Amino acid sequence: MGNIFHGIEPSVYKSQINVPYQWWAGETASKYFIALRDEKKILGKQCPQCGKVYCPPKKTCPSCFTETNAWKEVGPKGKLISYTIVLRQLAALQKKVPVAFGLICIDGADNAMLHYIGDVDVNNITIGMEVEAVFADDRNATINAISHFKPLT
Image 1 (spheres, rainbow, N blue to C red):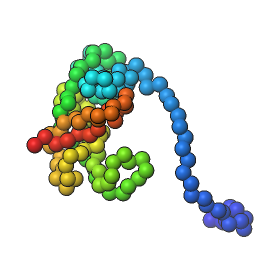
Image 2: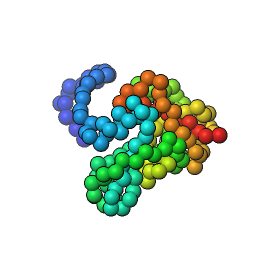
Image 3: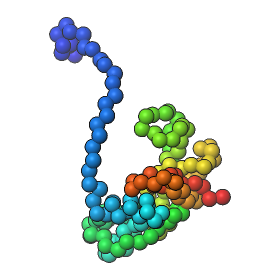
């Protein structure tokens, strides 16, 4: 393939940009995040047609496309169904590496949520282990109101 710059050597500048933005989380996510922050409660929503409970909650059931209506308290315990260990420190990581992220099926929910796994040596994490939510001391209305999930011994 020919040089598309016709004899001009391209320059590459490495930089980082910060693009702050805001968006409305919506009624369903807002209620979920506020309950995490203010009450230390994990909520899911139940589909009236198929009965599945989703946590994080969904406004519409992804299985049968029916609007969910009933709020259910779930967790704070659950089961680790998959995980990965991050070994490279990136600016977006709030925790120091190595850090583990897991897919956690919260007790009472039919789907899984992604979150940090903490209070454990990453070499001792196993699929199927029981975990429990640890709430942050300084909570905001985001998923980070849950600091991490720790193994139950």
